[in-house]
Length: 128
Image (cartoon, rainbow, N blue to C red; front, top):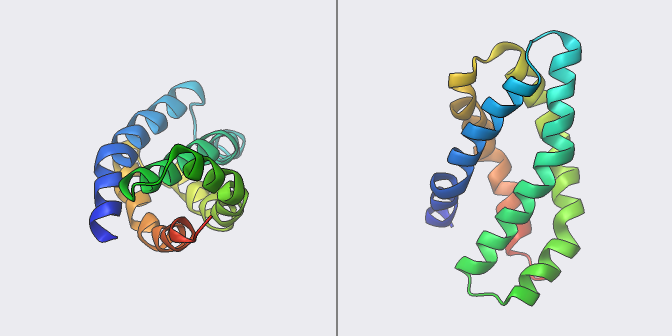
């Protein structure tokens, strides 16, 4: 599991997060309350479902699951994954977008992500 999660972070999460958060700062500049809340909303309502779908797809492919199995996994668990995310990430991202400079966002997110990945890994390995 550790190697799988590390490779996912290296291949997808790090690069995609880097570009996504830079882009988010470009389209929603600023650290006042309105801009920070807007960034959190975009992150959680647009990025979160995409991220979770890619995560479940990656786990399925690594485990040799069929596309049908992966599709069922996403259909069955995407909402639970997003609900779990919404218990952690809005507060983490309020801090992130208000106080963390963009160049340090990925290390900050990775620190929070370690605990959250434990939740995702348990959910991701649950049979569809």
